[in-house]
Structure formats: structure tokens, C-alpha cells
Length: 314
Ligand SMILES: [Zn+2]
Image (cartoon, rainbow, N blue to C red):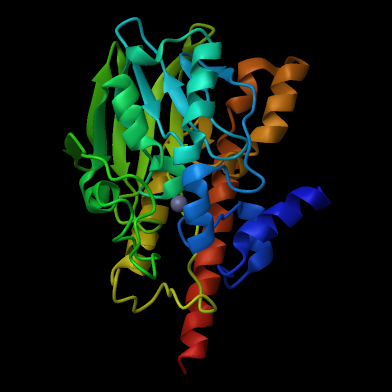
């Protein structure tokens, strides 16, 4: 456990929040905030990131991501949807994971994402080339994705963080993406980025349909009074605090059974993999209580940050 926490502290350098302990607990990584981290991630996986064995999660949803940065393959006989592809340097790992499960990357027709940060869309340009798939993204995140992350509100020097990629279709809140019987709904849950997208769908296991969520993120990674990137009065993103508040309110209304997200740490993935392997099977991913706890902890960190910023401005 100590080693794991140390690694997290390493990634949190320079992105201290109002409550570091809570940030670690939430796995609030500092994606896109650290210059060295962003540059390194283009050619090699950042420290502490590595490939894990891909596995079946639930219904026709498969895990093909890294140890924490998630990548999901949603399959059908008519073609597959890939949700997030991690870093530029993650592409060979994700590709290998998909192929080792017996799927052909040429069958990936749609490429979707959680949000415009390098650990989720860094590999998007390469995957578009490899698969010829159509790229969808929430309209509010299109400028960041197509500009290689230069416009992100946490990007202090405006440098490119990943290969720019042309988005084929800009999505609106509540729009669906459908392929081969899979219907995914894109919910705009902004704050972490302006177009942060929480996806929902249903998946069948043992003859019953379950509500599945892929939470974007409601983490404050990279934001905090100590980093100079503030939640309140942020000129690059004036509506950030209000957007987070709206997202918490909306996410609490979602009927969630299978809880998945853009980082494994948000939904205790490592621990659930062990339970699944020890006989728990697909049912370990059914975790409405874990979803609620994740939201409650993230909201506490958000409120603590607002209080800290207000106190410091007095
Ligand atoms: Zn992020």
C-alpha cells in the first residue's frame, strides 16, 4: 500500500489541492498539468503506469487499458467502440490488449473519450490512423482535442501535449452514439474539463440488463490555491466552480449499477479484479454504493477547495 501511495504522491507533485490526503484517496491525478509528465507521456509511459492483462468486465464491455488509465472496448458483430486510449505512448499497449482478447483493431468503428487530457486522448490521433474509426467528442472539448491540449485551462505554457486530431462529430449533451445494438449516451458533466463526458449504457449479464456508467471525472487534479490554477475566478474557465456543482447534482440522479470510470482508482479496479478472479465474476462490478462514495468524496474535496480559496482571498 505504501508503495502505491508513494507513486501517487509522485504524480501529484506541483498539483497540491486543498486536501492532498483526499486527493490521493480519490486518485486525483495531475494529468496534463506537469510539463515534464506531459512531454514524457508522448514517448514513454509515465512512472508508475504499465500495462495489465486485459479482461472481460460485463456484458460486451472489455477492459483494455493500463493499471489506472482506463480504456474500454464495447463490442458488437457490426463493429466496436473504443472509449479512451490513454497516452500516445500507451497506444502499443492498448493495441496489444485488444488483439490478445481476439479482437481486430480494424473492427473499431467509433472512437470516443471521457475528456481532453493526455492520459485519455493522447493516443487518439494514432488510433484514428490505425483503425480508420470515426472520432466523436463533446463540443466543449473539441478545441482542446483538435489543438493537442494547448487550450486546456491547466496548461500554463500553452504547449502541445498530444498529436492534434480532427474530430469528425461534435456531440451535444444527451446525444447518443449507436453501433450494432450498443447505445451509449454522452452526458456533459463539465468542471474537470469544459466538455467532460460521462457515458452511460446498458449491458446484459445472465439474462438481466444493468445500467452502466463510465464517469468522466469530478476530480480537482491540477487545481488548487498552491498551484496557481484556481477553481474560483479562473480567467481561463470562469464557470468552472458552477460547472462542477451542476455535474455533482446531475451525477447524483443517475441510476447506476455497474460503476466504471476514467481511472481505475475511482472505482477500486485493482481490488475488484482480484475479487472477480477469486470467483466473484462479473457481479463485482455492480457497485452503486461505491459510485455514491466516489461522488461524496469528490464533492467534499471540491467544497474544501472553495472554502480554502475564499479564506485565502480575505
Ligand atoms: Zn483528466
